[in-house]
Length: 106
Image 1 (cartoon, rainbow, N blue to C red):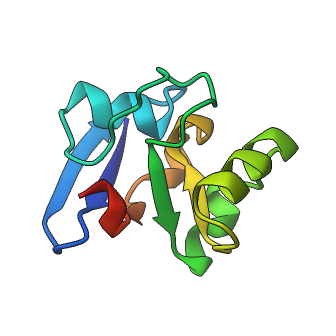
Image 2 (image 1 turned 120 degrees about the horizontal axis):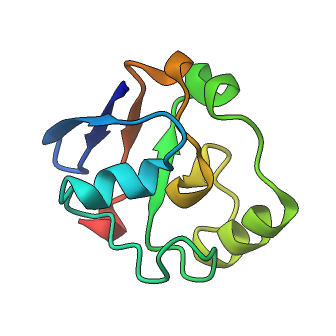
Image 3 (image 1 turned 90 degrees about the horizontal axis):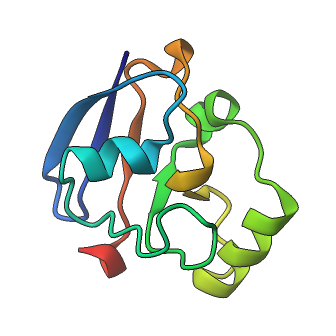
């Protein structure tokens, strides 16, 4: 299990435990984290599970796939730290990770 903190645009924090091997999106949805709608259920077609990772945490979550990068370009433009939480698989090393939710998902 890894403790992941989702921070709403207004500063409200939601710290949840997510089993290793699940996506951040799955962990957020199973704990009813507001702002992670996940309309496509993780199929990489909607962009409603957008999170912003810190530059320091970028190495923990790994790089975007080309398909994710294309979806992000359509969703948020050129934000260097934007990721789709459905594409980030939780590992033990992510324990303590915090991600921010954009205002548009508030």
